[in-house]
Image 1 (spheres, rainbow, N blue to C red):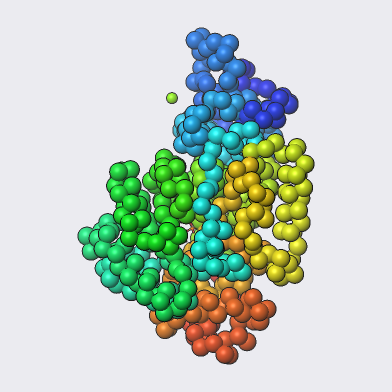
Image 2 (cartoon, rainbow, N blue to C red):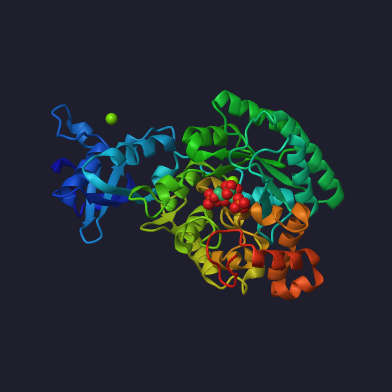
Length: 489
Ligand code: CAP
Ligand code: MG
Ligand code: MG
């Protein structure tokens, strides 16, 4: 027990000077939760594994504080004076403190960071998103639908020409958004700059044919920042502003890459792909952090969008509550996380117009999606951020992906309770009996059916591609989960 980190019942932790965190901690046999909790607080703030003689009165004033313990649930609440973090708005630094060495401490069998709370006073140091989903909606002219997207598949192995052909097929079929898959980089069979050049030609062709703007999200993850920046600048030199996003594999490329992109390219949609997050977030993992924590830090870092999971509808593990909570934490001004109410304003949330705004948002979100559908047709961000977006950490777009196909769109929209996200279907589009173009058309038709309040089977009577999709996907699941109404293959 390191007593200098134990402050049970200390109310001062709510004075706006502390980042609050809640952990699930299981001590190894023979150790008490309170003892281990103070060890974790020490190791994740100012101390070490033994009380040190070199601390000073000032250094002690920066000690993390264990302020609440729930012995029954093995939960520990720790408050971190946010002055100890890098004052240049550095997310990597916070995670090194509160999700760093402590995962290796031998006194714990489990140590999972379940939720964090950022006080408004702390938010002013962080960028938050700049180019948001609303800006992409403005560019695409799409306000009353999820952004309907795909990932080009096979995941890797196409030439740049073959890759661009599939993107053209999807866009020509009515799709809006195409992304590189998370491992796409500068492979010998698909040289990076050739892929970008081919995408520009394919995009121009599809836009001429459909009369509609299109967007492509390019994976700019790279071995080093110079190469990443070189790829970004090449894309900028070849693509129209607004027609591209920068995809970053945020977990494997790291938080510095995410924040570098946000700081250097405030007018580009920063697309956070979270490949690898499962090693930290899966509920069966005793050590790591939750999807809510990952999502909150991505918004603080300034990602414009992050994958938040398919709420149990698709192929990836992830229960509805976890994924829906993550989407709300991404999108809303005020949202309830697993343990904390997070309000994403830089103004203390005692400010009356913030309180009123969060209540109004709460009301709109709590009513049935269909009843308020027209209301939900989003106007620009000022619905949330009246004339002064600088007061807020702007919204971040959920990106919904993983084992989805047009048949699942309705189920997904209704489990989410909003249309304000990007959805990307890879296997569920490129496996369509009529190929990528047919898959795109089926996806658009599935959305049209939902919007018209018509069952897709009914709507499919007048829409061939959707009818083929229903037949095909009823037989061939695009995910490993048993889904209601699907026969097992
Ligand atoms: C989906 C995907 C995405 C996952 C990521 C894939 O492809 O492109 O990377 O959705 O998971 O490679 O699996 P499919 P998450 O549409 O073919 O499944 O969104 O949960 O981070
Ligand atoms: Mg150390
Ligand atoms: Mg992928």
